[in-house]
Image (cartoon, rainbow, N blue to C red; front, side):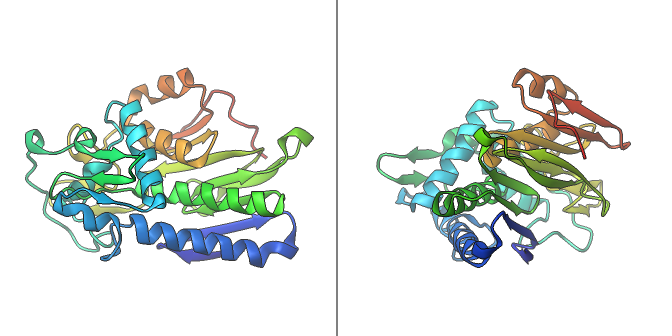
Length: 293
């Protein structure tokens, strides 16, 4: 089954159709919880209450999503940085992708806060952002919701399940029995997609082909390179990564777009299977990408 939420397609597949409605309830509950905790598009969301710079006790949902994002930032030395929310806003990406041409912002990189300025205390469930920082969890929250919903459905019903939110896929199944499930991966610009068989894993696709708009000086998209505070300019238009979970896959796919020419070697060193599509449409496979069917 599928529907639209968070302005993206949500897909739910369970091997036993008899529990589909119950599984849908779980998925919708998780998504509602994540939206209230982590959306920068929801005026009363929990993450937006932290812009005053004060330390606050946060919900378990926001705490874990933020923890995942900051771990990715640390692991990539800031190439993944959730503190770029205000940069996205300055480029025009506020509550939706701009429909008219926007002015390019005047950027002052030296004064911009980074992930290193965020204080997260997991033991005390507290979080503190520098005043004025908008924490953007777009590259983490969707994937976290997919992982969490799929895990809850799997643990409750012990049945193979695939949850997809805007192209981020979480898969749970009985790997020990040789079970695999089919998943489709959209390129992002055409109605066609590639299909592969996988076991328990996460898959995520990052692309510069969607969420695009125009500024007075350049084409703009939503994947920001923190080093320049501007949209990334590498050779890849789409990167799909397979990892142990959807959060890890989405972080790796996003960073690959930003890394550009060095992404293929980076993914290979991490032994992360990937499918990379250049701006010219050429496809490159990395580290034992599954056979397409």
